[in-house]
Length: 290
Length: 302
Image (tube, rainbow over all chains, first blue to last red; front, side, top):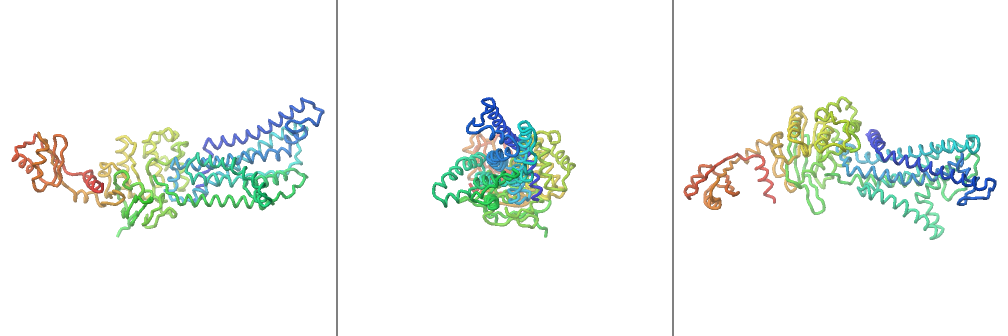
C-alpha cells in the first residue's frame, strides 16, 4: 500500500499550483544569477576591455566569465540552488502536510485502513521526489544557459572540462542535503497542524536560528567551532562544496573541510531519519476526529 | 450465532477531565441499517472517530468483522466505506479526479466503477468540475460516491443527508435501503429522527457519552408507545390544575391555549374537565413516535 500511497501523494503534489510555482522560482533564480553575471561582464567590458584589474563588487572579468561558462558555472550556481532549494523544500513540505489537516483529507486515507506511518512516509517520499525534480530541472536549465554562454564567450563547448557523472552526483548530493529540511517541514506541520506555523517556523529556523548559531558557535571556542560543522546547513554546504568541486575535470583537490563527505552525507541522513521518525510518532498519536 | 459486523466493548474516550464516550457497547449485525442517535455533543462523532481509527480510545475495544481496530491497526477498515462530516476530498481536483485518486488504493476499482458510483449519486454531469466549485450538497454526494467506490461490506455514514435538498435526502434514504437490501451493513449517524425511523432496522441512542438504549426500532417504539392527548381550553392553567388531580396522568404541559397530557384516554380527560366546568373546544390525539422517545431518553440526563 506504500507504493499506492506514494503515487497518490505524487499526483496530489504535481497537481498543485505551488509545485509549479516553486519550480519556476528555482529556474528563475538560476536565470537571474546568470543574467547578473552577464550584466557584470558587460559592464566590465564596456568600461575598459583591456584592463584586467577592473572589478565590479570585487569580481574581475576573468572571474565573471568563469562563473558564466562550463565548468565553473556549476560550482557557482549549485550553491545558490542549494540555498534557495532549502527554503522551497521547507515551504513545500510544510504546506502540503499542514493543509490536509484543514481539508481533513488525512481522514480519507486513514478511515480506509492506510497505516499512519505510510501516510507520512509517502508524503515525505513525494516531497523528496519533487525536490529532486526541482534540482534536476534547475541544473538542466543551468547546463543549457551556461552552455550557450560558453559557446559565446569561449567560442566552443568545453565538454571535456566537465565531469558529467559528477554533475549527476551533485544533483543527488544537493537533494540529500535538502532532506532534513523536508523532514523538518513535515514535522513542524504535523506538530502544529497549521500551514502558517509550519512555514513560518521552518523559515525562522533556516533564515534566522541556524545561521546565527552557525556564526556564533565558532566564537565560543575550538570545540564549538568543530561542532558547528555538524549543523544541517554546514553539512549541506560542505557536501555540496565537495561535490561541485568534483564537477571540474582536473580541478584542484579540496582539502578536508573538517568533516569528510561520507560523514557529512551520513549525518544528513541521521538528521532526516530522526526528524521523520519523530513526525511519524507524533502523527501516530494524534486524534483526527471531527 | 451471527457474528456482529461491528462491535464496541466498553469503549471510552476522555479528554482530560471530560468523558466524551463512556463504556459504549454497540453491536451492529450483518445487513442491517443501524441508526446512531444523539443530541449535539453527545459523543456520536467521537465514537465514529474511534471506530474509523481516527481517534485512539482511552479504553475499551472495537472489532470490525471480528478483527480489532485501533489507530495502529486499521486493516479491517479496508472493507469499510465512510462519510464522516463534510467530505474530506481535495478542493483543487475535480470530482472525477478525486475518485480516480482514491481508486488507486483498490486494484479492483476501474473507470467503469467510478462512472457507476457517480451515476448512483447523480454527479456524472458535475464530475469534471473542480471540487472547490461544488455546493455543500454536491460535496456530500461525491463523498457518498467515494464511500461506495470499493464496494465496502460496511458503510459508516455521519449525517449523510446534511446539505441536501428534500429530493436529495429522499434519494439518499432510498439508496441506504437499497444497500441494505444488497447485504451491505450501514452504520448511520443522524440527528434527523424521521430519517432514522424510515431507514433503520435497529438504533442506539447516546447521551452525554453513554448509550441510553439500543434495540430494534419497532421494539423500542413498542416499549415506549403512548398516546398524547391535546386539549384546547379557554383557561389552560385552570385545566392543568384540574387534570393534576386525575390518577394515571404521566405527563402534563401547557402551551398557549393547549394542554397536552399522556397516560389517560381522551374521554376520561374531557369528562374530568367537564366536572370542573371546563369544556375543551378541540381534542386531538396522536401516538408517540421516535422523536418523543428520543426526547424522553435524552432529556433525563440534562
